Length: 121
Image (tube, rainbow, N blue to C red; front, side, top):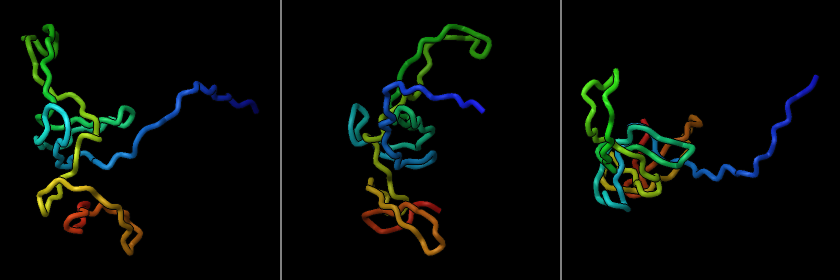
């Protein structure tokens, strides 16, 4: 049986491991929106970016189409690199780094470094 041989393109997948998840509350620690906080709407793994609610807003000029009959200027969120975001602990309500811990039932959870509270439910 013949197998297809994958050609090497020379590109490496140098993507960081993401510490954020959809639905997390995060605080922006760098950039034009520094200090703002919001909820993670989407994570783009291939580009190491996240879309956060009401952060990094851009204006998109759109033509009228079937979905948007009016057209005009639409404001929407654009992606932010996740190195500029910090997770907010739901208990101590501060931007914090996280630590991974394995519980007795072999479940991996995220833990707040400041108050040692489990972030994942």
